[in-house]
Structure formats: structure tokens, C-alpha cells
Length: 143
Image 1 (cartoon, rainbow, N blue to C red):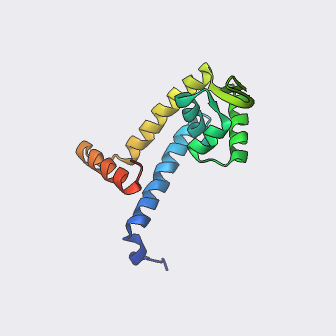
Image 2: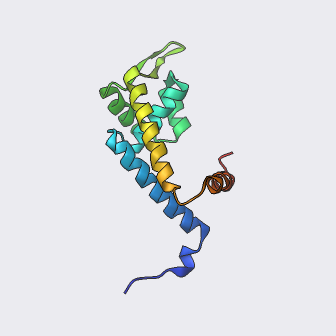
Image 3: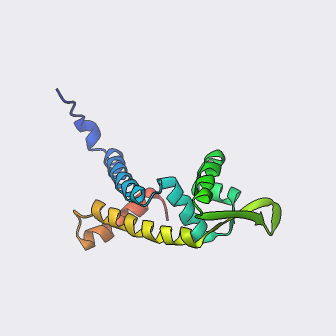
């Protein structure tokens, strides 16, 4: 016997959650093919966009716990994707900068993530995608 949950499955929050789970799974698989985990990609992207950047600013900017950020940055540094150096504005802090190898990997990951998102939105026409993304942005409160 399978459980139907019809009253739950019609809720927008349920449907959005399932879509988000599917999207994350598609992107995570694409990033794994490049050797990165999701949080590694998020942090590497943030460093590339705003770096050099202090670790504390990264924690606030991406919403990752400070202890977890240290682990992610250690992994990225061990893979020669970022470097941490004393922040010239405040020597007590480290500034994180993406390396040229990190930029190359990030470019491949961005292509892979776009392809995964294209797969997620494949059932929609171009016009439907534009409308969907606009509505989703409004509902999510990200603008």
C-alpha cells in the first residue's frame, strides 16, 4: 500500500521543495563530475566574485557556519583552488583569493551547473522559463 498524501502534494511549499531537491541533486551530480561538492562551489564562486575576501565576510555572505567554512577553505586550499594570506587591511585576518586553477575549475563547474539547470527546466518553453524564474524570484524574496 502506498501513501497518497494528496492534501500535502498540492501545497506550493511541497512542490517547491521537491523541485528544489531535484535541482540540487542535478547540480550536485554535475559538480561531483568536476570533483566539487555544493558548498565548495558556493564558496569558490563567492571568493571569485568578491575576493580577496576575509573568511568572516565569507561566512556572513554565504551563510555557512564558521567551523564548516574552515573545512571547506582547507579543502579548497589543499586542492590549490584558493590561497589564504594575511589581509593587508587587518593582519589579524586572512584574506582568501581564488587561484588561476580555481578560476579554470569554476568556469567548468558553472557550465556544468547551467547544463543541470537546463535539464531541470527542460519541460518549460523559453517564455515559460522566464515567467517561472520571475515568479520564483518574487516568491522567494531574493530581490
